Length: 72
Image (cartoon, rainbow, N blue to C red; front, side):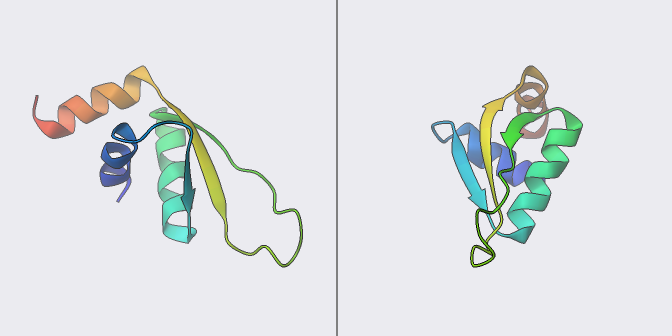
């Protein structure tokens, strides 16, 4: 999922918000790989249980990964 998310993010204006447990896990993996820069804010209240991340930038490594996966 993380590579499809990386491709999707490359088509969106940044910053872009990603929600949901699977999306957050994919953003965390991309962050650890050095493909994106992202912010993971803490929930403001216990009622807010939807995890979110804001991807602020695709890095050079992220752009290289996109080229590699697209076969270009």
